[in-house]
Length: 107
Image 1 (cartoon, one colour):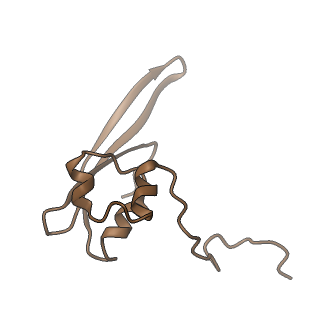
Image 2 (tube, one colour):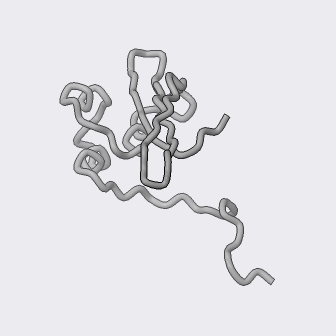
Image 3 (cartoon, rainbow, N blue to C red):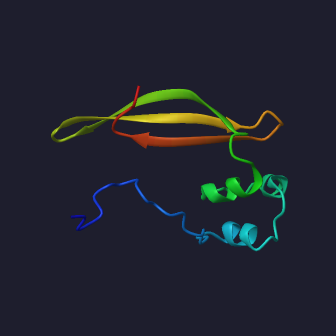
């Protein structure tokens, strides 16, 4: 009696990566061969698949550096949000910093 897909993660197939940014297209076409070429030109990495092209699964380690609460005053009161900063890198000299704002923090 399976009428529709109700399970969110079951039977999910990996789709082929379609790059959105110019950097993503250059990496997929093989015109950029190392992460150092991205670092030299200080290009922002907007797609996680770019990093997946250069590093094997399990080689990257991440650490939450800071969770910063932010309040904003509105006419209805105050809204609370949290800004999180995460450091990601392999133990070989490659490092990256990510930040994200959210209404909730998982503990």
